[in-house]
Length: 501
Image (cartoon, rainbow, N blue to C red; front, side, top):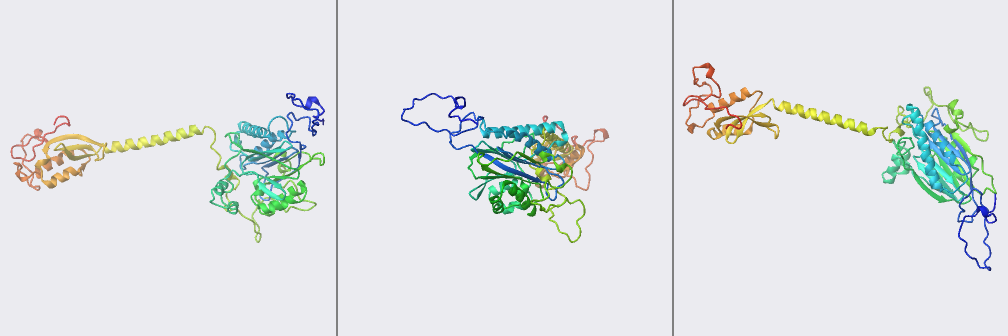
């Protein structure tokens, strides 16, 4: 380590300003050689002294959490489970994010975190491209990158980051979950969210397919601050007061293990990952070596379902083997609301649809429009098989279709005037209630109307409804319901076209 105040090569290039001889030379604090841009503060650079623990838990058969702890970087990723292998998603993400664990340089820490999350997103997408069976896999990601003074946090999903300062706990991240949206709207409380049936639904995750805008922010850290990152297997069951109590005492190693133990004892049915780190002065305290835990470490969870650690200080965490047989009589276990539904599988629900969603929507719209067009066409065809007697321009006419606007038109016009009919018959004709299945029957109806429905003063003879009128011609070939009758006969009707009235 060199002193930038005595090494000209380490000082930034600036314009020289004359300084009075009486002004004393300002002291310079030592800084690492790797810093390209000196920090404005004279505080020495700090580092993180952390420890990470990940446990499969008491119910699940494999660990889909991954965690990392290093002198500059802390990270927790919770893979979305199921057949799509969330352990691959979380392990891939940690594999990319751990490359950020380097001494600070000229690039702003927030930009570095954003780039790291983007690289993790791309790497997961490459895994999906290589193995289509992974389509749908995703992971949460909570990342904390330290540059010696400022901590940059990047967050996607429902893993969390906390800060303990002077005995006061602050939650740094905000969950991207359905229940958190209900809390923000004031519809439920924090306590209600812990038992909500949809508490596992996440709204954001890294899946390699759909771009996600992470939450990004930075804050100043002080010596003595303690950071805590965890998956929802811990924060989903531990109250803030309990977390504060556990974080207050002990080394990062002791505290992280106790936090996992407390989460399991509180009834957590998920994987549990906890990362605890203190902000220390490296000249007074040597930071611990980097640690990779959980799915990213590819350790004993591949060999069996047991946890990564069996106890603490020669003790036992109380971890149970995953339940693979019937529950013995007399033994009670905490059973989910619906034992047939894996809560982890519900975490897929808020994810966006797979690729080519626009093509699927377009095809669905085309099918709906096609069905609607066929239904309308069938209805119109059916209406055109009907005929009814009505009135048009003062004459009795035959309409084709049904008495609905747009579904009927004048088919034939008779020479029978409506004014010549009795009032009751006029009302019946105007209502269009006489519907027939063929035009021949409609014609016969008009003939009957003319014979039986004329007014007495119309100058025609109205035959009795029970006595048929005498034929007007002796030639059967000339007999037609619409042919002109003899003088004084029944109806005088002539078939006309709509335009030949």
